[in-house]
Image 1 (cartoon, rainbow, N blue to C red):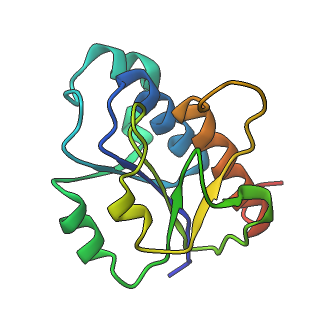
Image 2 (image 1 turned 90 degrees about the horizontal axis):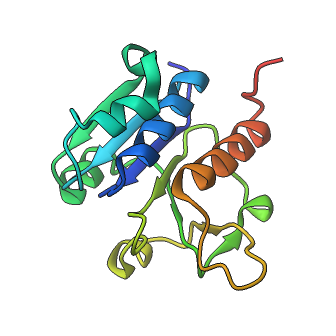
Image 3 (image 1 turned 135 degrees about the vertical axis):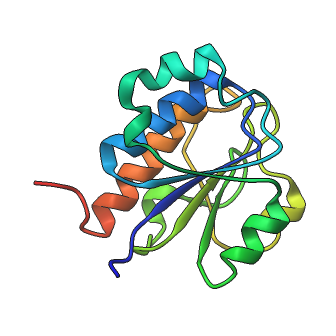
Amino acid sequence: MKKQLELVLYQPEIPPNTGNIARLCAATDLQLHLVGPLGFSLSDKYLKRAGLDYWPHVKLTCWNSWEEFSKFFKDRRFVFTSARRGTYYHHFNFLPDDMIILGPETRGLPYEILDQSDNVVKIPIMGKVRSINLSTSAGILLFEALRQTGNLPG
């Protein structure tokens, strides 16, 4: 079985961000995991609108909790994201089967999760902006990981 990157949203809060990320995963043919509790219903109209008509092409798995998710994938490498700490993503060596994990929009990943690994990446932020939009961050990180692992088409 081919090793493949996967994207994980931990307790996402904003439906349009999750919809945009689902569309990104459909476009790259990558698995998307949503780790609950979610801040919205999967039937939310804004979630559906952001994903457009691509939802049938999204490989989506939902998990009830971090404990359930992390126990199931205990043998995979988790790459956590943070707006404040970690290695700049362009200096980090992604592996073909990494699971890139992004936290909720208003608070990011909790320290008890971030502290589980040294594999934490961040995106450079200039000026007084606190963070970059979740779906934008997912796109930046995912395409860098695909580039590094040689999995970009063309």
